[in-house]
Image (cartoon, rainbow, N blue to C red; front, side, top):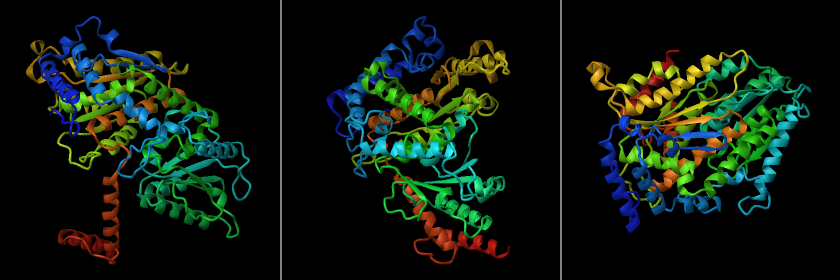
Length: 528
């Protein structure tokens, strides 16, 4: 599908689209194996930035198609777009807000980009994190905290959970994440914890998210049932929100700006569980890595900008080569939550069918984003990838860390060989003339290899910031608002109506089929 990227396109944009469509038709006639025969391919298609190697050699491109993509980027003023985001332009058109997540990692108070309040907020939650870690802040009976339970969902959950899972800590505090409304998970966790030594974080930007608020009520009841009635448990609860009039008595409240989207918020007070787990110094390393990626993206030419290249290839695969899904495949168990993080970041940002001009779009926007930990996935979905009928693209992510002495070097080399090998097979397939028909692998699927020199806070910050910029660039190219999520809100509204209907309180605006299903559910609970 050739995209009509924005209404009222300029002459340069129309020419860029026409050129790309012609290039896509040409590339389809060239096999992946033939593309890889160019001896200078790696030199022309890789970049090493901030401790991360990006290798695009196994993408379905050549120099002419890449030039056409860069011409499209120029026609859509990609460089000016992110500059506008960094200056605080109101890019969230439906809510009339800026998207200030880059300012959260800006280190200099005097910067024109930075809001002094952001620096004050950062100092507040980092000082609190260090006070908990060193024992200055304690529970109701004077014991130091040993466990932190983070209660949130979506944007307030996935980023912090990924970072805490990916990076090792000194184990002063164990941080647990609870997002699902299924109470069994929370019950199993609480059964292992000492209420006198447990700190709870309730994280909700709007402070209206049902799953978060219900889980928060449940853990507070759990506390009251297990402590003396005179105990002051206020010190055991921290709330993170943008709601200015939140009243939770003496319990601590940390604020974030309404101009920080949930899925872009791990750099704010929403990152408190990261700071509690890693300490303020390493949290600042995370911010520094992200800030340096911001500087790279804002200061590089289009041809040398890794986020621009990632976005352009995302557009190329989805809209010109017909990839309906994009996989994120980590070959490092520490990054096993990266696919879920990218899934929300990309699909909630760009899964839109109406443009920023409030007109329906007539082209595909975000592909389905999915994936999982490799090499397990090679024995699950790789049959589908290599011999299935659907088109896709992929990011394959691995790390080159020096391994503990107890780890077998040969085993790590085997994992890296799989990462490189699977990427190669995705593009070039195999020789159909040398195998039976049922063994043929057609290839012709583009993938990017992303190798981290080492997995630490700085490099992870750079990687996650790159993905944020890729998503924003793609949203601009598709003409959609990457910074709202109205589809999520409607599902919440309907669920609220049905929940009250299940209690017999309301059947307004409920169709007859659904009413019958609700009656079936109510009847089931009456038999218990």
